[in-house]
Length: 477
Figure 1 (cartoon, rainbow, N blue to C red):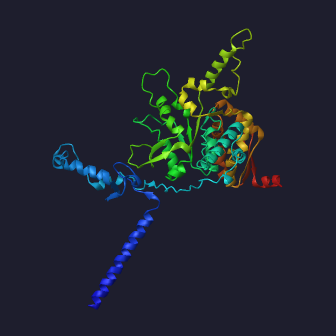
Figure 2 (figure 1 turned 45 degrees about the vertical axis):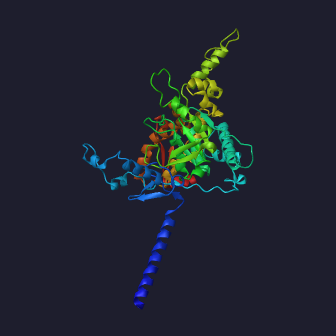
Figure 3 (figure 1 turned 60 degrees about the vertical axis):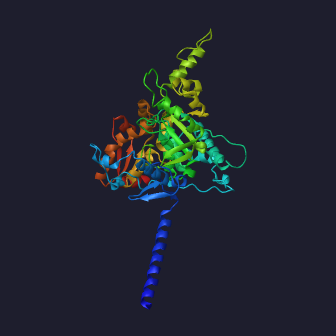
């Protein structure tokens, strides 16, 4: 009898240990994320306790009840469905590869009565510090760097002081206009490395009206959510950069529905202004089998950028009309040689380009980036922290070879880049072309100590100067 009692006690202890282990496993799985219903895609905090099914499938009680109601009402006869031609019955296990197992929604923290500010104002980088960091990587564009530094600093302050008093600070969305290759995207990418707030860089070319093939407008927010580790509260104080914004301009002389132009602009109005948006977690489209979560775009700063080709002609046409009337009229070709003609852009010019007035009105800060001349291209080659020349010098340094560029050679590269008319992007392709043979031949000979790129080599009238290790060491001494 005593042995039986001991066995019963031991079994009870084992059960208690198993219960504790299960509880610990549940705690490990509860990492701040919550389950969502596979049918209605509502998270557990909204739909209530989930009913767990095999193969990681969760269904809320409402959807389960609706399913039972349909079966009991007699509208769905499963026995007839089995015998219908063309109907295939599948197992629940077939859904295993269709359902994203790790797409979970992070739980929102319960709001406390005394809300502490999310950001500390005293720890925020001032505009001059943000600009100084940008100066290390971006050459020129002083006004653009100043404008974006102030906007980001004000965005920090706006988020930090959101609940301080009754005065509500409105956000200042920005529109960057500049020719291709002048550094719009690079400016924002550099900013992304310097900031602690989540920043998403997306493209407007793939956006279409809801219901058509392509990315939904809400996919812009879902990319920010991914950058914030699916943390809604963190994403709601982030920054979104929408590149190629000029590609959603209103199409001219078309009889078809403009699903990727004016419709996208109209769909983005509430997004820019601030509204509750249902964004898919871990997917670009709402049609994917992914959970939906609500994100408020009220505190999200939007920066839009585009090259706006042919906008210069619209500005010249407007200026020529103003200056070609009367006895003191200017010549029609007065503005043809104007380099910074984009600086004279107005809202009316953008409207004529194809941007609707409501969209432009939600981007109050409009500034332009200047085109690059030869001097700036030479500076881009050698001055930034990760300049192209420094990258090649590092590559050859790994082979213990010193790479030197003469000043005349840099000027020749800049002249060739100006002819291509693609901005700073042309520099890389030109240097890749001339460095190909050097990068191929140098590893063959271990005695090479230094390579000097001359203008004659760039112009095609000569070759690079190569020095052996002994000569290079003597010159260095």
